[in-house]
Length: 202
Picture 1 (cartoon, helix red, strand yellow):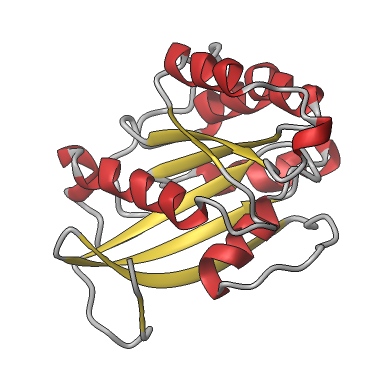
Picture 2 (cartoon, one colour):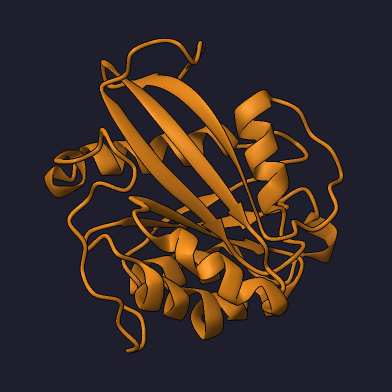
């Protein structure tokens, strides 16, 4: 999956959202994917995003990847950014069990409440696998959770550059296999939408 210059014409444009508690490594995953680099980053304030053009499955695809703040005080600010997202990546830190618990308690509920794309593809990413000695959430726990909620699952290390591109590649493959997500993929916000719901997720 190679990056291409931004001027290249593309077949599809997909919006991907990164959500999860503060400090789980969302910004580091985005930086690693978009630039190949890694830094110890301060928590995101509000929302940040990066764009990258890739080739996958014979298609050129522009990804706009949005990195949202995990702190509660920014929730009302970031809720609008769920709109039009064809892919949602729910990130937790394998060395902090509370960030895993938050996926069900907070983040999947927010996806259900604010997401506007009916068949958006969801992926659970278990980040910071380089912290093996302090790990609190097993692979089996992550896999079981993802299966229970109909999500893809990948374990990553942004710091060690482990499976970061694989995660985005698998997500995009699944989007490409979902016809309803391709129908209006030329415009990030041009999708048929559903009304936001207040019911519990999945």
